[in-house]
Structures are given as C-alpha cells and as structure tokens.
Length: 132
Image (cartoon, rainbow, N blue to C red; front, side):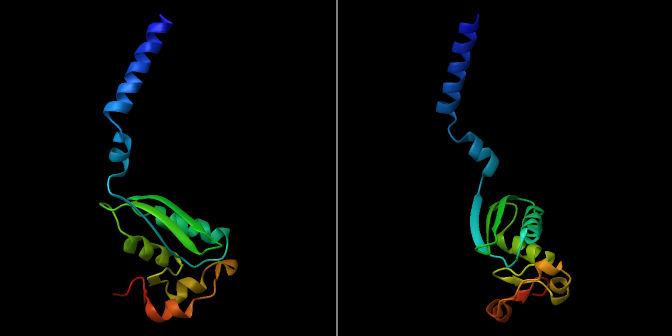
C-alpha cells in the first residue's frame, strides 16, 4: 500500500514539474518588476517605517531597505503599481527618495534619531510628494 502511494505521488510530482514548469511563478508574479532606488534614513526605526510604507502599496511583493547603502530594493507587480507610487508613499511617510521629497513638517516630526541629513542635490532636483 505504501509503495503504491509513493509511486503515485512520484508520478504526480514529475508530471507537475514537467508539464507545468514555472506555473507558480506565472500565477504569483505575472509582470513582476524589481528596482532599486535611494531612500534616505538613519536607523532601524527608519527601516521599519520605509518598508512598512512600501508594503502598504497594493502590488508590492518585497521591500528591503539597506541603511548602509541608503537603497531600497523593491519587487512589485507592474499591473498593480509602479515605482512612482511607492516613492510618493515613502516620502509621505517621512523619507526623501530618489525622485520625491517629504515635506519639511513631516521630516521635522520624525523621531529624533530618524532625522537624517537632507541631500542638497535631491532637494534641488526633486519635488515634494504631494506637489505636481
């Protein structure tokens, strides 16, 4: 009885892998895009806030911010969202990104250890998240 079960399981497994390769990837992540961009911050609280903001956007599959590199690696479904929407959401939460700035009041109201030095180049070339 156990031998039949094992053989049946093996046949189903082999057919599943052979007939439907990548089916899981297609179903889960059709049009998944991965990008990396600058997000300014200082500490573990910043990491939590940045990643939480990114994950709050529908379609985001993975968000990992590196404090050392000041970069966010992001995977998202491009049929549900885009990089601009995620960057605007992170800026709204209090962190300047590669293309969008948080407003001065939100930046000033961050926890004292989270108030990062603002990059003059970003301030010069970018716009506040809620201003077109």
